[in-house]
Image (cartoon, rainbow, N blue to C red; front, side, top):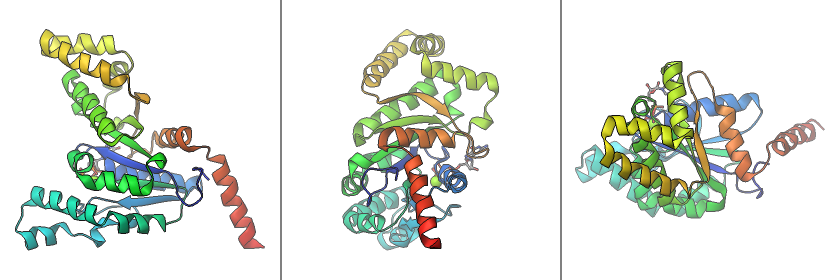
Length: 272
Ligand SMILES: Nc1nc2c(ncn2[C@@H]2O[C@H](COP(=O)(O)OP(=O)(O)OP(=O)(O)O)[C@@H](O)[C@H]2O)c(=O)[nH]1
Ligand SMILES: [Mg+2]
């Protein structure tokens, strides 16, 4: 078992700006985990997803269809997403019940394209409470292209801190699609994540004194509350960094070797 409570596996919510690579990460993580004989429960909470490539054991689209919401309430895609999130909130108890019924060692949740839908609407808070907040954490994905400029990088640091603050869950930042970056760019971004004074200088060159002072001061204050500092690169394309996600979950919720022992014991039991 990863978690301490047999009935409730740890829940990792994958969050990030539109197109950051959330759905691909769920797919890659599920695929990668199969080799470890670790049972990952993949969950789709994005009613707007066109298609997903992982095996979703729960898919919100079976409850709420974005196109139906658009038609029924005469809404555009953004309005429909908001209403869909609120409809989901009203069914949070039922959703949690269905999720609780799923068995596996770790639950990985794909969230809607727009980060604010997950962070700011009530549905997520309801769901987190009903699933058990002591069992939940956030994998926050940085967009690699946006991370190449100091201001883009800092903006994502701030956004991640806001999500962490808003949902009150342990949050770890990952640099998504790292395979798309040159080695030099990657090194620079990782250095920014480790050394605030280097980031400050780079931002100063790009944005000038006033904006830099404002942003860096905000960041400094928010980072004091951060439970998992730093930025870890990953690539769903190459299946790189998947172990770092597992390590993050283990550090929070307990060891995985017990999980494998448990799994092996189950197999043994079935054989007999
Ligand atoms: N090169 C590369 N491309 C990736 C990687 N992960 C995702 N992509 C591509 O990035 C695009 C967006 O990926 P998604 O996984 O759909 O991103 P998302 O955050 O779920 O997107 P929304 O749900 O629409 O917000 C797709 O074209 C993916 O193929 C990666 O690790 N490397
Ligand atoms: Mg997606």
